[in-house]
Length: 114
Image (cartoon, rainbow, N blue to C red; front, side, top):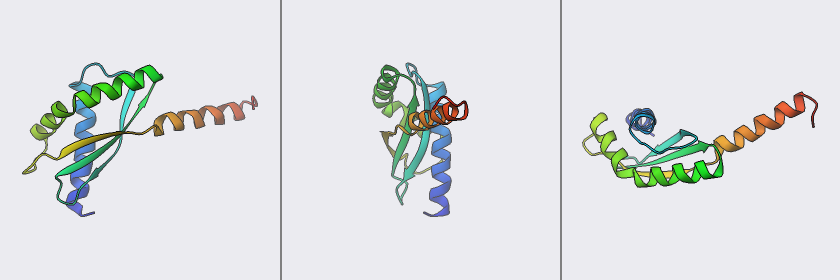
Protein backbone atom coordinates (compact mmCIF):
# COMPACT_ATOMS: atom_id res chain seq x y z
CA UNK A 1 0.00 0.00 0.00
CA UNK A 2 1.36 3.38 -0.95
CA UNK A 3 1.58 6.31 1.42
CA UNK A 4 -1.22 8.00 -0.51
CA UNK A 5 -3.47 4.93 -0.19
CA UNK A 6 -2.81 4.84 3.55
CA UNK A 7 -3.70 8.53 3.87
CA UNK A 8 -6.93 7.97 1.92
CA UNK A 9 -7.74 4.90 4.05
CA UNK A 10 -7.35 6.83 7.30
CA UNK A 11 -9.31 9.79 5.97
CA UNK A 12 -12.14 7.50 4.84
CA UNK A 13 -12.26 5.78 8.25
CA UNK A 14 -12.51 9.12 10.03
CA UNK A 15 -15.01 10.69 7.61
CA UNK A 16 -17.31 7.67 7.35
CA UNK A 17 -17.38 7.31 11.15
CA UNK A 18 -18.35 10.96 11.47
CA UNK A 19 -20.98 10.70 8.71
CA UNK A 20 -22.56 7.66 10.38
CA UNK A 21 -22.61 9.46 13.73
CA UNK A 22 -23.93 12.82 12.50
CA UNK A 23 -25.77 12.33 9.21
CA UNK A 24 -27.36 8.88 9.17
CA UNK A 25 -30.56 8.43 11.17
CA UNK A 26 -31.97 5.14 12.40
CA UNK A 27 -28.75 3.39 13.40
CA UNK A 28 -29.08 1.34 16.57
CA UNK A 29 -26.46 -0.06 18.92
CA UNK A 30 -22.84 1.08 18.68
CA UNK A 31 -21.67 1.22 15.06
CA UNK A 32 -17.92 1.27 14.56
CA UNK A 33 -15.74 1.34 11.45
CA UNK A 34 -13.24 -1.48 11.96
CA UNK A 35 -11.17 -0.99 8.79
CA UNK A 36 -11.23 0.36 5.25
CA UNK A 37 -9.48 -1.43 2.40
CA UNK A 38 -8.75 0.88 -0.54
CA UNK A 39 -7.97 -0.25 -4.09
CA UNK A 40 -4.61 0.78 -5.55
CA UNK A 41 -6.25 3.55 -7.64
CA UNK A 42 -8.58 4.70 -4.81
CA UNK A 43 -11.66 3.99 -6.95
CA UNK A 44 -13.09 1.37 -4.59
CA UNK A 45 -13.18 1.06 -0.81
CA UNK A 46 -14.38 -1.90 1.24
CA UNK A 47 -15.64 -0.52 4.56
CA UNK A 48 -15.61 -3.12 7.33
CA UNK A 49 -17.91 -2.19 10.19
CA UNK A 50 -19.21 -3.75 13.38
CA UNK A 51 -22.30 -3.19 15.52
CA UNK A 52 -22.44 -3.78 19.25
CA UNK A 53 -26.02 -4.43 20.33
CA UNK A 54 -28.86 -6.92 20.22
CA UNK A 55 -29.54 -9.01 17.10
CA UNK A 56 -32.44 -6.68 16.25
CA UNK A 57 -30.21 -3.60 16.58
CA UNK A 58 -27.54 -5.22 14.42
CA UNK A 59 -30.01 -6.13 11.66
CA UNK A 60 -31.63 -2.66 11.77
CA UNK A 61 -28.23 -0.93 11.52
CA UNK A 62 -27.10 -3.22 8.69
CA UNK A 63 -30.28 -2.33 6.78
CA UNK A 64 -29.89 1.41 7.41
CA UNK A 65 -26.25 1.36 6.27
CA UNK A 66 -27.11 -0.61 3.13
CA UNK A 67 -29.92 1.83 2.23
CA UNK A 68 -27.68 4.84 3.00
CA UNK A 69 -24.62 3.83 0.97
CA UNK A 70 -25.34 6.42 -1.74
CA UNK A 71 -25.81 9.24 0.79
CA UNK A 72 -22.63 8.19 2.64
CA UNK A 73 -20.67 8.18 -0.63
CA UNK A 74 -22.05 11.63 -1.51
CA UNK A 75 -21.03 12.98 1.91
CA UNK A 76 -17.56 11.43 1.56
CA UNK A 77 -17.24 13.16 -1.82
CA UNK A 78 -18.02 16.50 -0.18
CA UNK A 79 -15.28 16.01 2.44
CA UNK A 80 -12.40 14.19 0.80
CA UNK A 81 -10.18 15.70 -1.88
CA UNK A 82 -9.96 13.06 -4.60
CA UNK A 83 -10.56 13.27 -8.32
CA UNK A 84 -13.17 10.52 -8.00
CA UNK A 85 -15.09 9.52 -4.90
CA UNK A 86 -14.46 5.82 -4.27
CA UNK A 87 -17.29 3.35 -4.68
CA UNK A 88 -18.15 2.09 -1.19
CA UNK A 89 -18.94 -1.49 -0.26
CA UNK A 90 -19.97 -2.02 3.37
CA UNK A 91 -19.13 -5.40 4.91
CA UNK A 92 -20.38 -6.38 8.37
CA UNK A 93 -17.96 -7.93 10.87
CA UNK A 94 -18.91 -9.32 14.26
CA UNK A 95 -15.49 -8.48 15.75
CA UNK A 96 -16.86 -6.02 18.37
CA UNK A 97 -19.41 -8.58 19.51
CA UNK A 98 -16.77 -11.31 19.81
CA UNK A 99 -14.42 -8.96 21.67
CA UNK A 100 -17.17 -8.05 24.09
CA UNK A 101 -17.91 -11.71 24.80
CA UNK A 102 -14.22 -12.45 25.41
CA UNK A 103 -14.02 -9.52 27.86
CA UNK A 104 -17.12 -10.80 29.64
CA UNK A 105 -15.57 -14.27 30.03
CA UNK A 106 -12.29 -12.81 31.31
CA UNK A 107 -14.22 -10.72 33.87
CA UNK A 108 -16.10 -13.82 35.06
CA UNK A 109 -12.85 -15.76 35.39
CA UNK A 110 -11.23 -12.95 37.37
CA UNK A 111 -14.22 -12.87 39.74
CA UNK A 112 -14.01 -16.64 40.19
CA UNK A 113 -17.38 -17.33 38.59
CA UNK A 114 -15.93 -19.77 36.06
